[in-house]
Amino acid sequence: MSDSTIKNAADNSEAHNEVSPMISNQVWDQFQEKISTGDDIVSKVGVKRDPEKIAAAAAEEESARSAFGRRTTDVPGDTVGRREGDAFVANEVRDTTIRVEAARLDEVLTLSGEIGLTKNRLNHIRTEILQGRTDSETFKALDNIATQLDLLVMNIQSAVMKTRMQPVGTLFKKYPRMVNELADSLHKNIEFTVAGESTELDKTMIEDLNDPLVHLVRNAVDHGIETDAERKTAGKAEKGVVQIEARQEGDHIVISITDDGRGMRADQIRSRAVANGLISSEVAGKLDDDQCLELIFLPGFSTKEQVSNISGRGVGMDVVRTNIQKLNGSIEIHTEPGIGTKFTISLPLTLAILPVLILKLGEQSFAVPLSMVREIIRVTPDQLQNISGRSTMVVRGEVLPVLTLSNLIGWEASENSDVGVLMQYGSSSFILSADGFAGHDDVVIKPLDTFRPKGVAGVTMSSEGDIVLILDIKELLDGIRT
Image (tube, rainbow, N blue to C red; front, side, top):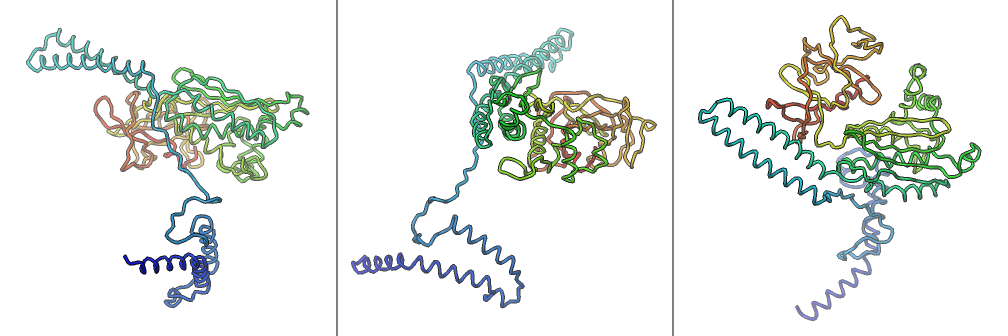
């Protein structure tokens, strides 16, 4: 390349650097003028324009350009990174690693070795049977091997589940700072305590539980704890207390969020729900205190008159209940006006293995979570009553709606749906009728990634080798008033 070529290129670069801001502004002004006046090819072909939409689009484009686009001080061709004032949103990365104690891995290794030895014994017996040995000693040995294999499989399932268990303390440790910052912003004096940090829960459940717990803790600070003046008037300690606690009860984990604040009054919640148009006055008048407390889980419910960055948007408690129910859990409210409020969350230890009740509809098997089943009853035509166009049945003085499984999944009505399953979903109870049931089992859910019919959470396989569809009760009940 000659010296003159290099010089010309340098001169062009200097000229470009000098005029680029001006050119950029001129081009942008011409663009705005054209989209505002319609003096371009679009207007010539007769396309109608909406001035309001054009103005809104131009304003949005200008906002995005000033925040993220090239500025008048930028030089085309230069590498431009984040500058002061630019917004930056980092995608939250889900942690896919688990720290496991060596002793737990050793247990899995030992059990897998024992399963290998049992498999060899089973193959040996199989060979003897195929060769014609069918005496009682052979079948007795086969029965012993099958029993031992069943025990080993249960033990290795338990051992593998333990490798997925993590202490909830990894989740709780995030909250003290959040509470302190929120209390400072609200000018409240709050003591936050944590108990049961060593309680273990499945890792995937810990991650999905974070958002509901954050919302409940924030609610305790914002709605629950009174101001210093209010606490002094009520004769309470100057410092309010918010506690989160986890403990294991049987095969469930119970997490509670407690505050010693103002509590909740059922009559105020009822009035607020009516004022927000969430329920009618007639329906509100029929609710008892416990049912009124459940109204806080309605979408759009809020006790705040004004919207803030903390609360008042009407989005929260309904999402909390939905997320907990996705984990096959439940949430309950215990409150006393002037004393405080306690939210109790009950969760299974793991989602990998799900106890289910298997129902039959024709030749097809369906499964519902056993945690939702209260009892199994017989449904006969003479017991059914039609109330307001809905099939109902009275069980120990309680009038419950009867929903047929065939109708819920869109199959043809079955004439043999005489088995009823009394189910509890949230605060609602209903009877699900089917053709029969085939007992209960602990199953491993296999998701349907490519095709998932409505109301089906996944599939599993029965002991007979049949495909069992696991029902998503929430999705089936969407749009149906129970």
